[in-house]
Image (cartoon, rainbow, N blue to C red):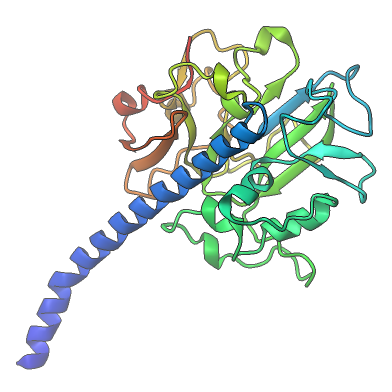
Length: 304
């Protein structure tokens, strides 16, 4: 009789406990997003109003040198972004992607900016900054190493976070793990003037209607690599409005996969929080958004 009662109680309590766990994970996920956003704002305070870069960094082939990409970014004094040397690749000094740039503001102050390869391995340390880019509702912390190389900490499931392209040539790229998608309209860069309103280069002062424009959101990498980058096998983990989008772009466009977005980039993860998602906005607030077209229409990648 006692065993039967215990079994009934367990059957009653298990769904409640599971629901409580999911809610706790949703809250922790939102907290991680808020921390990353605050780290971006602190980076902007120290770098003339500029947050780090992510997504496609499209440089003018005539405005850079192999020694540094800062000229192509209009950052000759290297005051806007964080840079690292790349001795293994012979490219010179390049801007690091978002996780490496914000790591000091998330408590990881010992990154070796003299060597990109060392930074890459430091970021993959699961006890470090990587944890801030993970959602506890995923299996991110349990992923195995991608290779048997004991000197390579890279886990499976990596996705492309940044590509530096010089004209049509992909000069430099960076993959990492993240359970969040970055808004490439805010963090991407394109040197062509006609696309300036669609790629803000991390310039916080250029973000209009900051309480409605997302910085990061729950997302998963695209299931397919970018066909425009055949040499690189990893898909993207960015949320990317089309450069020629004629009107404001929202998460509803991402959900629909319409012509307003480059849909092979980051995609929304419907099952993760049971059709809910955390979004952190450019004013720093975090909101839990139901993944319906009506709700997602109020979350913008770009605005007029």
